[in-house]
Length: 279
Picture 1 (cartoon, one colour):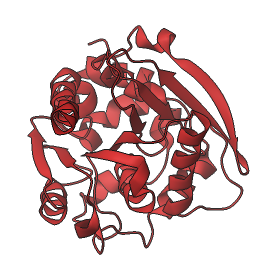
Picture 2: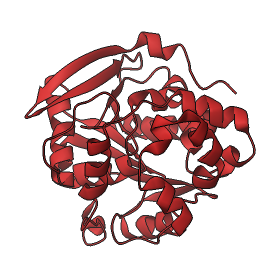
Picture 3: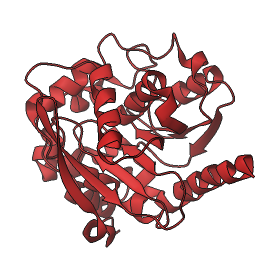
C-alpha cells in the first residue's frame, strides 16, 4: 500500500516564530475558492503523516503545521496548556492572513480543535473531530495500548512501529504489514520533551463541561476498531455538541489514512453545505 503521494512536493513550507518556538507550516493551495482547511495532527506527528488525506482533497486549500515539539517544530522550554497550543493555531492563520478556517483535528489534534473552536470561535467556521476524545475525562483505551502511547519510541524505531501498529492503531493495521510499513515511513522523530509536553497539556483538560456551547457545524468521525480511544467517546461527544453528526468508519485509529478517499468525500460534502447556506 502506498501512503506517500505527490502532494509532498506541492507543499509550500515556511517557518514561523511564535513566542519562544519555531513552527514548521505547510500550505497546499486549492482551486475551489472555498474556506481553507486547517488540519491538526496527532501527538508527536509531523504533517507528512496527513499527506494521504491531503491528496484525497485535491481542490481544497490545506494548512498544516507541526505542533511545538512535534515533527520538526521546536519545543517550548516549559510545558504548555491546551490554550497555548490553540494560540499557535491563531498565530499561524494570522501569519497567512487567513481570517477563519474549517478546522479538522485528529486524535490529540482533535482535542486541540475543540479548544480552538471554544477559544477563538470567530476563527473556526466548521469543525471536524476525527479519532479523538473529550480529553482527560474519557472512556479510556486498554492499558497495554496506553502504555505504548505513553512514550515516543515508535517514532524513533520504525521496526518497533511496524511491530505494534496493529495493536495500538487497530483496523487495517492489524492485518496489513505493508500499510504499517508505509505508515512508519511517514513518521518524523519528535522532540521527546515536546512529546511529553503534549501529553501533559491534556492533564486536567476536558471539553465535557463546555461541549454544549460549541456552535460550529460539527462532524465527529471515529473508527469502529480504535484501541486507543473507544468509539463510545465519539458517541458521547456527538450527543453533547448541538447538531453534531456522527460517522463511524470501518477501520481503526488511522482511518484518515487507510480510508482517506472515503473520509475526504464526506468532508467535501460537509464543505459543500457552506455554499448552500450562503446561496
